[in-house]
Length: 603
Image (cartoon, rainbow, N blue to C red):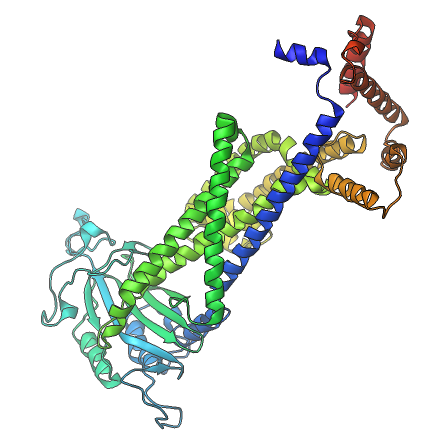
C-alpha cells in the first residue's frame, strides 16, 4: 500500500533525485579521498620496509658460499654437491674460507676485530656458526625376503617417528649425542621431507685452524652415516653500514635413494627498525595506518548494522572485510615480531661463543613482509570500486560481470581437460623428466607449455610414441580450441556492452560526468563561464552509433524508446501537482509492451 500511494503521488521528484545524486557524489568523493590518503600512507610504509641493499647483500653472500668452487675442482661448489666426498671438500674449503676473515688482503690487521670475523671486511659474524644433523634408525623399513641375504639394513625416509635419538660414534662430544631443541624455530620444509629441530649439533670455533681440525676429525670418524638424512649449516651476519641482518642456512639433504640434494635460504632483514630519522618517519606512517584501520573498521560496523544481511550481498563489502582482516593480521605480526626482537636480541648478542638463533626472528619477519605484500595488493584492487568515474573502466567491469557465468562454465570444462593431461604427463614422464616429476610440477609445466616454454626433447626422449601425441593433442585442444573459446566469450560480451553504451544504456551514476557537471555549475555561479541551455549540453545519441556503423533502423528504434521513456517519466513521475495524475490507458500499455518486447528481441 505504501508503494501504491507513493506511485499515486507521483513517485520521486526530479529535485529529490538530483539531491540524492549530489549527496552520493559528496559521499563518494570523501570516501575516495580518504582511501587515497590511506593507500599513499600504506605504500610509504611498505616501501620503507624494503631496502635495495637487501638484494645486494644476498647476492654477495650467495656468490661467496654457493658459487665458490672447492680446491682442485672448479666444477664443484655447494650447488653441485652430489656425494659425501664433495660435501666434506666444501666444508673444509669454501665454507671455512668464507667464514673466517681475520686479516686484510695484504695480511695486515687495520682494526680491532674484537674476536669476531668480518666477512668481506664489512659484515660481522654474530657468535659462531652451527652444524646440525638429523638421522633415522636402522630397520625403519622392511627388506623383501628375497633380498635379505644381500641387505640386512634398511633406512627409511625421514619422519619424526623414524628419527634416531641414540648416541653413536665416539659418544663423547655433543656432535655424537642427540640434543633436543631449546628454540622456537619452525620446522624446515625441504625437497624430500619436513625436518624438526634438535639433532646431533656442534658449533664451530673462533679459530679457523681449530674448526678445520674438527671437520677432519668428524670426517675420519664417519660422522655422516647411512642413516643421515639432512645437515643444516646456520650462521648470521650483521652489516652496520646498511643496518641489515643476513641469516643464512645451507641445507644438504641425503634422500633414501642416495646422493645429496642441496638448498639454501638467505634472509636479509631489518630487525633494528628505528635508527635514522627516516625510520621515525616510517613509524609515524605506522601510527597513521593504525588510525585509518580504526576508522575503516568503525565504518564497516556501521554499514553492517544499517544494512544487516544485505551488507554481505556486495562483493566490494567482502573485499573490505578481507582487507581489514589482512590489516589486523599485519598489525598482529608486527607487534609479535617487535616484542620478540626486544626480548631476544639482547640475549642472542650476549655471548660471542654461542650460536645466536636469529632464524626464528627472520622467519616471522619474512611472514610479516608477506602479509604486508598481500595487503597492499588487495588495497590496490579496491581501486576498482571507484571505476564508475571512467567509461572505459566501467565497460571493463560490466564485461566481466556479464560473462562471469559463461567463464565459470568454461573453466570447469577447461580444468577437466587440463588436469586429465597433467595426470597423463605425470604418469608417463614423471620418472624421467624433471618438469613432470610430481603432479604439481606437471600442472605448472603445462601452464608453461601454453606460454611457449617447454622441453619437447625431454618429453620425446622419455616416450617416443606417447610424448609427441601428448604434446600435439595438448597444444591443439588447450591452446588452439579452449583458449580461443575463452577469448571469444570475452570478446562477444565486450561487444554487447559496447553496443549498449553506444545507444545510451549505461550506469545512471557516473562519477566523472557528475564531477564535470559540478565543476561547470561552480564556474557559472562564480560567473567565470556563461550559462548554456540544457539542449546545448545534450549530445546526440545517434552520432556515436553511426560512427560505430550501427543500422539506422536500430538507431531510430532506440530514439523512439528514449522519447517514450521521457514521456512516461514526465507524465507519471512528476509531483508538481497531485491533481495532474492520470492513469495509464490500455492503448499506452499495449504500445509500451510491444516496444519493450521488440527492443529486447532485437538486442
